Image 1: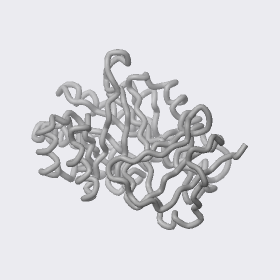
Image 2: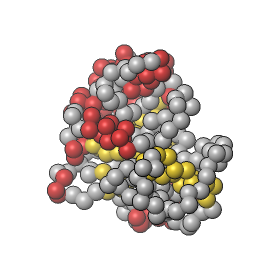
Image 3: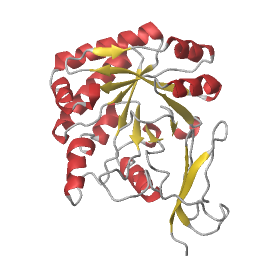
Length: 309
């Protein structure tokens, strides 16, 4: 789910009491040249770099490595690095083999700690997805073991999780399927006891298998955050959001007469060919607007969804 984005921004309170620390920004970096160039141009504005550099297979074999230019730039700007490690190909079968084999995930843990020592990382972020709900306990046990090993080495372990409110399958075949294969494996309470931070991937609310709608509507997003806060301490929870232009998304778009309209539009999308950042505001009291980061791109179109009352 997260491999197709260009830039993702997360605002967090990282590992310290809420009143003692200002929010920090995580820059999620891919190997895409545009993503790399964006980090190189804005390294001085990034608090923590989270590059997608590593993967692990069913036997615990860790593959990947840093981009030397990115690594050196981060060091020059004193930006801590916490790479992502994903389950290879998001293969459900291979991940099941990994979490059921203690020797395999012990091997993974050792390799990740060695990478931290060699490259100066502050830790790693797990991005394990497409996990069957029956592996829920096994995932929590594996995370607890790795977190213990990391903390003994004064390293941090974080994990990205798929939003899973209300904590059970909903009605319909798609709701059952997505809970069984994507949402049901994350025991937020157990994970929060082990890791330093849980990064809630608040997307995609709507997909090609659902009715048309926003990537992350306001009510859906806040609902998932409120649900997560029932199990995760506030200082251990962050939100990840992403926005991208889908193929064919230009079709059917229409430009509004006035961007300054006082009508309570529910959602504002600004779709562009080179989108660097987009902020969404949903209904009152949020003011509909869209923001750019970097050079102003040529818009592919603007879509407004919502009431006109």
